[in-house]
Length: 423
Image 1 (tube, one colour):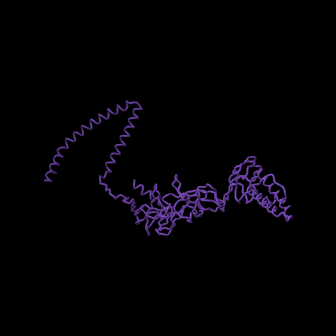
Image 2 (spheres, rainbow, N blue to C red):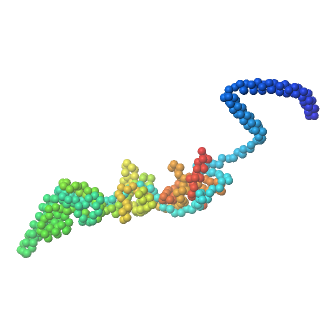
Image 3 (cartoon, rainbow, N blue to C red):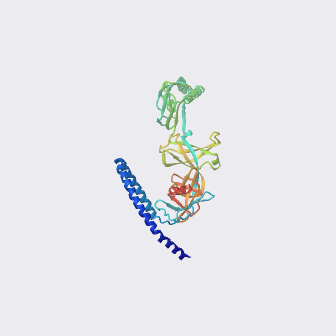
């Protein structure tokens, strides 16, 4: 059957040759006529139009050549596309698993460490501020009406115990001096007369009462001895510092009139400060007196100050819902100032944790993640819980087991691959 079909096609081809020859001859004749007419039309055009025709012909030739080349090079073979599984696997627990077949991580950029559990302090954050130690601070107030004649120490002045602060003119102090001198003279007169021992005793009592009155008004023992030795009164009362420290605030000006009880100046010891911190309700049960605190300030990011909680308020602040705790802070280096903001870490106990560098933790909003190496090309991003030990270390308390390979450096870079696959 096949041979018959081929024989029939061959006979039809032989019969069609004369007809095709005639058609070709006829076509060549008409093609020559058409070419001659087209040539006449071309040369009748203006030079600009002839240029446009040539450009169109060039473009048509280039397109035709491209089509021919494309047809000749078209192999018409099927391209095999291998369907691969998605590289990222998401688990119900929130763990992401990423496979990177054939990818080798640069060990200079991506550094892994073996997870080891160690004992670390359990800390809670205690924000707060510094203040002068109220037990080491004093308020210098007027003990009698008077007028400020002179100021010896202005705001910020360093003073010693007994240093003059202000000088006051006080009629009451002048009256007390006169009473003291009169009783002193009377006692000296009666001292040589043995028959007047009762009167001598009364004079001594009056003298002592006058001296106490002068002390209550602010006179020092030196002032009293000076008056007794000189037997003369002084016009003004010099009020002196009750401690060694600094003048925090001065409340009077020279020439101002003060009443009894008016504050003249506030003094404090700058080397003795308090840390006043706020502990929130969820942490109340863990706070006890004597616990150690590490204090950090923005002014000294590389320094730590140690303090110990010595006071826990009996009530909470109804507005902030926080409990006030206090600790003594030694300021021997004179680095700290009252009202500085402080971030405190209060140690409440010990716990098992995996300590890693801060570079190992990926922070996404409020969540914390670590990247674990499962095999040579498989990595898992697991959610973790913990807290900052310091600015360089993080303690993982949940989410990582002993012996796991944790990405210590380069976690943020590898997490970008997780994010791209997740999108």
